[in-house]
Length: 147
Length: 287
Image (cartoon, rainbow over all chains, first blue to last red; front, side, top):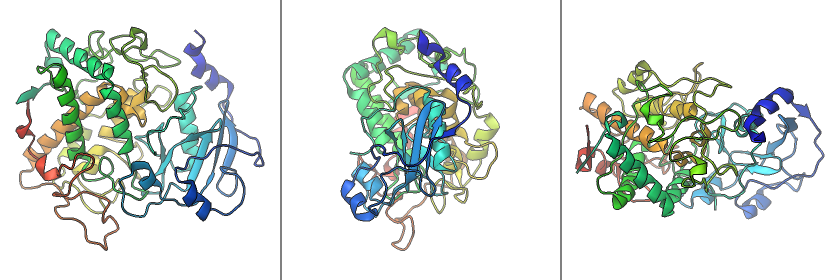
């Protein structure tokens, strides 16, 4: 069965990240509240893109892209329960175009739906850690985290 | 009133009954609702909104109620069943009966980390992963995470949390400035080289679904959290003068106002207050 050794093969084959540029039109967005985003975001480049603090690279055969986004009422949109004004993680990340749900910790680090019990200093590190964990699997597009 | 036991003390029949009830709750579609609920209530402390389940004082009572709700579903199937626990400080072998073919099954295989043994292996047909972070439909484990090794917590690491006489403290979150038992046991770490303690570390050690936002997909989740629940009871016994904090709602000027649950505030989604859950002997005993 070919999947048996897929991560081993990936790890052997793609040990270096390759930057592929910043201009590509990309991918769906992680956010749950398009109205809030439209209101808050400058009409600039399609997100996520490799602007300041952004990245767009091939890591272990997966295209990971990330870029900053404007704060939105993120947790409230997700849980339907929160009362306080909610800030989002400030970043959106995709793996092969599929959104990786990312959260921010109070110390400024990032965790994702893939790595939920550990956090990472930067968006790039949380994206790479997710690829390390999922190997060749595709992120699910079904959302249970924000409705 | 029922008794929760170390899984090692279950009889062969008790093991079979537990597994059978879990599979039936899954078959009824109820199990996946528990998976979704846990994910929905994972709110991180760097974002707004109320944190009821994680990175906050109500980590213990929220999970106590969550376990009670699940245990009641098991008991609807088989009234003799209760949640067993896994003491990961002493029961660390990958060949423990915990991972036996008649109980939770073993480690994932190399490569795709698919669990191939036991009642929860995909090919058995009873345990499809339907609420997943990825599209893979099979249960995965990766004991010890060989690509980036992590060890199970030691008795000393657990004791470091249990010995703390303070339940929790401002700023009531996951950061290093939050002193107390709850933060040490939940195991978020800031500025410590080895990283990730106790509760979090066990999630990382098991690997697969346990590392992610759908961790209850692995039935070991329940045995892990039942032990966490027992540790809370041990902490209470060790520090009889201490108690749940914060005792009162935080004032409007507090940055955590409205974001953490004090002793008598209701916890979503059950509207149960921590104060109603402090004494577990109202519901069950630990053997």
